[in-house]
Amino acid sequence: MRSAKHISLLSASLLIARKDLAIEFRTRTAFFSAVVFALLGIVIFYFAWDPTAVAAIDLAPGVIWVIFTFAGLLGLHRSFGVEMADRAIDGLLGAPVPREAIYLGKALANLVFVSAVEAITIPAVALFYNMPFGGQGFAIAVIALLASIGLVAVGTLFSAMAVNTRLAELLLPMLSLPFFVPVVMPAAQATARLLAGRPVAEVAGWVRILVAFDIAFVVACMLAFPFTLEE
Amino acid sequence: MTEADRALHQVVEAHGLVRSFGGRRAVDGVSFALAGGECLAVFGPNGAGKTTLLRMLAGLLKPTAGAARIAGVELPGGPDVRSVVGLISHASMLYGALTARENVELAAKLYGVSRPRDAALRSLERMRVADRAETPVRSLSRGLQQRVSVARAMVHEPEVVLLDEPFTGLDAAGAAALSGALVELRSNGAALILVTHNIEEGLSLATRAAIMNGGRFVRVEEREGLDAAAYAASYRELVS
Image (cartoon, rainbow over all chains, first blue to last red; front, side, top):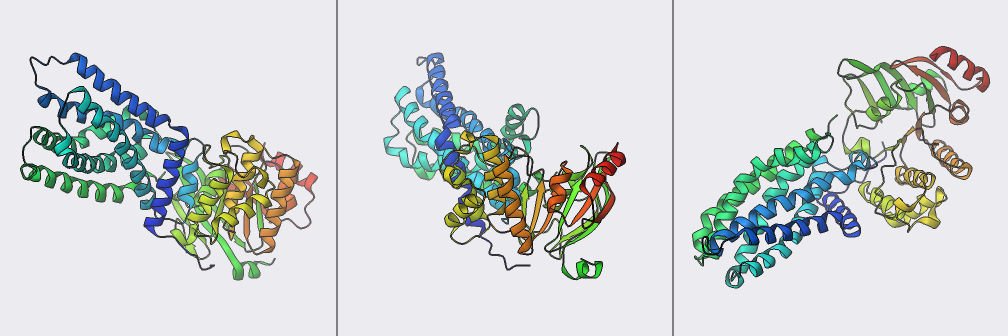
């Protein structure tokens, strides 16, 4: 056999992520859908909210995480959808790169996607609910990033599993949402405390839980991913 | 090529290859060997198992039973095997939002080809589609997409080329470019497996011909000495 020069797992992952982001940048379908969905969600929550009954500080963390979870699902569904249109996935599977690189590349692109949606949504929540995010902005951004890692780790795996089924749009949230709970719960708890002006040290426990789930989900999903592609 | 020569230089070998979907055997005990520089044309009706056979050889499907080797490595193998295989299938395997050059360059990078941009442009040039290199694939006609798809599959100069109806959608110029590229690959020592319904087209490139029906090779013979018209007649008789 000719001596083959293989690219590393990381290089292959970055190539795949860059390709996915280039496609999304040109079509912008999923991103605009997710942002519009998120902003509409914020508006609906805002008009359903009675400020005399519930304080903004109690409502905002829930609004943020409900919206992130569902807006993220829109991007996750698209993740493997682009591969199925002309069986481009066969081109990736036939390439001399580890299957894990496909997963990592997809997850990286999804992380950028979800983070971009969050970058628009968090200021919008601050605006609608008149929340003083300024002092805790960085800490909230870190929580959002950690939670996003967990969400895309699980969502990318289930997106690959669901894409070949006839009920992919339904199956992806059904499979993903139960696994989102251990990520969304500590993220919402930490966000609530930070918005209430509690010191960062008080959320350290929730952050540790988030990091633990992130590591567990990324490792488990990366190991499971090659089996989802077998026919 | 004699059987002894073939055994000495074989690049592809399959032994009793079986693939079942549920209770149905799509490929049912296919065995053959192919040396570098040979082209096996596989003819057969729809549902004969030709595409399933190619997908197994490309490492995209695991055999239910039997074994296959490419360049001495048992399939499905890993990156080493996949780096020497090129697959052209029914579907273009291209991303519509990316340009022709970006699609081929992405493949070149994934295959670790040095100077991937130059290699992509060369491959597009070989398929006579370089003038549309910066056009998004979704804006190209079906025939031009097929040429880009072939350029993508050949950008890494594969040692084994698996072709599933590669001439579909190609005009005369595209078909000539593809035939030229395949002849060049074969003369450089690549082994080709060409699945087609078009007997004349298949025999023009083949060194051996096989007829597949019901998941089995029902007839395999050397191309030399075969008359295309007589072969087509016997093919129709065999699969009817």
